[in-house]
Amino acid sequence: DAMVIQNPRYQVTQFGKPVTLSCSQTLNHNVMYWYQQKSSQAPKLLFHYYDKDFNNEADTPDNFQSRRPNTSFCFLDIRSPGLGDAAMYLCATSRASGAQETQYFGPGTRLLVL
Amino acid sequence: DQQVKQNSPSLSVQEGRISILNCDYTNSMFDYFLWYKKYPAEGPTFLISISSIKDKNEDGRFTVFLNKSAKHLSLHIVPSQPGDSAVYFCAASRAEYGNKLVFGAGTILRVKS
Image (cartoon, rainbow over all chains, first blue to last red; front, side, top):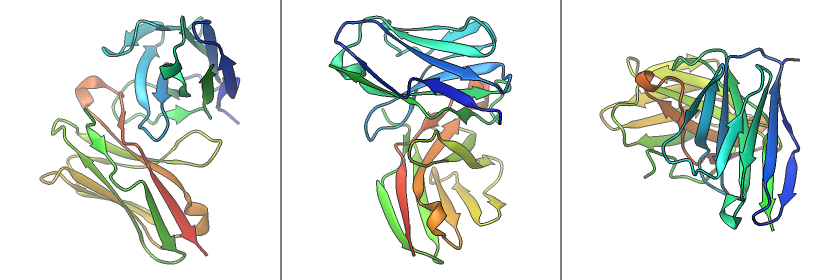
């Protein structure tokens, strides 16, 4: 089945230690998104790629970076995680960037910062 | 500044009855609205959507109603089934901003058998 895969499902890191979360997709979609969802809050868009074009949300902290080396993979890098970065990180894809394109989500990676 | 709000964190409904999940938004520029459903340990999956040019969209047991003047939408599930127990997220977007979704915090629906 075509899908969005996120590894690992759980990630524990130390305060200030860089961490990378990964997302892969077999849907061959052009657009990939990263959302942050803190406990009992709404998922919040951090950034997205349309093909190789990176689009950062205005309020995404500089601590968060992303890479998309090819169509299938997208990475979220947190350069110096703080306790406030503990959250569920959701990756999503869509075929195109039009407003009515369905987004397909992975199961998420839960990040714990010690 | 929460632009999309789901004010009920949870809802419990008897099997066979109607479930009504509510969502309010503050940005009148939103023109497309969606509902996503999420089971534990899975990612959200698209359920149903509605464009701002409509006031109702129906798909089987699921109907979404949009009241633009009140900036309110609701999801009706009739009849509710135990398998509908999940977290339901409301989301909104603006066509000029492409597919950037603004989500609500979700409502946990429990359907009791």
